Image 1 (cartoon, one colour):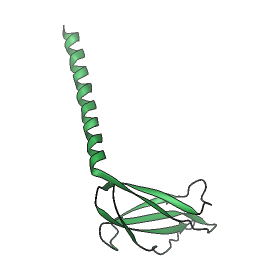
Image 2 (tube, one colour):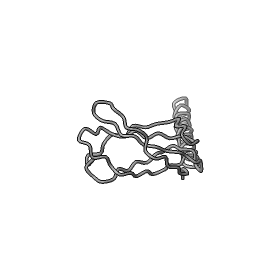
Image 3 (cartoon, one colour):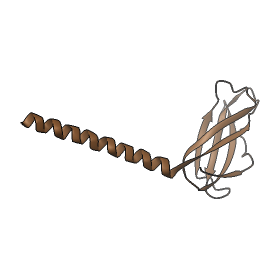
Image 4 (tube, helix red, strand yellow):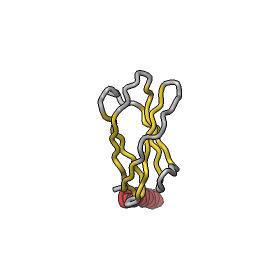
Length: 116
């Protein structure tokens, strides 16, 4: 009888955990948005990657993400998807390039977009 009780409690605990995970995932899907970016690739031989700066007011970049080069960095454009953004929020975005020695370019022109 005790063994049967422990089995039931274990199953209920696992189900409760799975429902919690499903609820969290559902929350993330409805609250988080994304913005897809695309820009002309740099051609410098010592290019190491890009840094994307973004925030919710123009010129005030409160977040950044480093984007390494893809296997085919010789392509003419680079794409990146900013994720886990607040849906329907306007974001202001600028990109820099950096080289193998750590030198970073100035900001690109600023663009704005809404997370969808």
